[in-house]
Length: 48
Image (cartoon, rainbow, N blue to C red; front, top):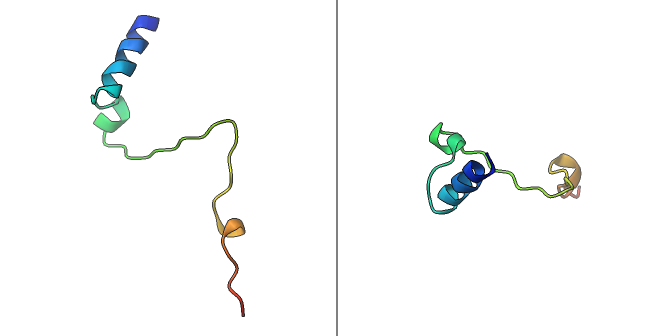
């Protein structure tokens, strides 16, 4: 099982499509141990 995962990882790293890419998904997110909110609370407030 570990060798299969390793082989698939190498194949994707060498340009093969991942399963989600082959199915047409285009989402991407890369987070590491934290999440910073992106939304109205962090956008600049317009001055009146």
